[in-house]
Length: 344
Image (tube, rainbow, N blue to C red; front, side, top):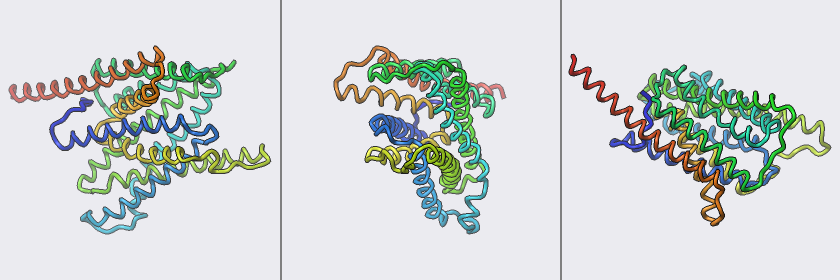
């Protein structure tokens, strides 16, 4: 059974709790910094820089930990090429998701866009059940649906409070299909990364730098696809505009903070997915979202929209419910083991 418990009594479980808490804080800080940036900032340039930073850090860690591994000394290129094809699919899916989201935003009104943007939360456990044989209790599914509804309500309340309104398109079908594609791509990518990281750990349990090797491969492929996307977008703008766009248009100190947070989030997500699951990672990011939308309002002592408040409460309830579901699942598994031993 898939475990969601955030409470443990050994070093592995404590490190998992710390990683999840760091992911919550990183996601909250990333959302806050993103919402206060200059509107001219192109997110694609941020993806390029964050993936480049992840690649550099991963390569440094691989070279530093290579001496600690006992077997033969292979070149860095050979090490990175081993199993690199497993990183191709997640990187391609994330790139496809980014394009699909931009299409959805241009064809949908605010409410359907926010609702469809959360399909990944529901699709992730569905795909984990089908592809990874993970088992979820009815309480897990209830928590998933509750968090989805809570995030949609909170997003709607925050957007209305900030008066960020969008105009509905007369042809919403392309936007609906694009958002469904985006949610499916994100969920599939998360499942692929989880399977890849856990498979690498199982196949080479004594290798200390396996985690950084896989992250270097993921960052390299993501950087390649993001670079191709940026060049395509840049050439398209050059054909329609007299002055070509600059790579650092709209950059500020907050943008650089966002880039660093995104790079840190990539490592935290990979670690949490490896030691827990993609579904648990979604709960941590949902909690980070709740902190991000409520925190600034509380600090500024502003009135909080009712929908936002209800949404945050639902998200918190879903996180607590998932934790209790994980504990009950673990206890049930232990009881089943005892019963089997008793029968034998």
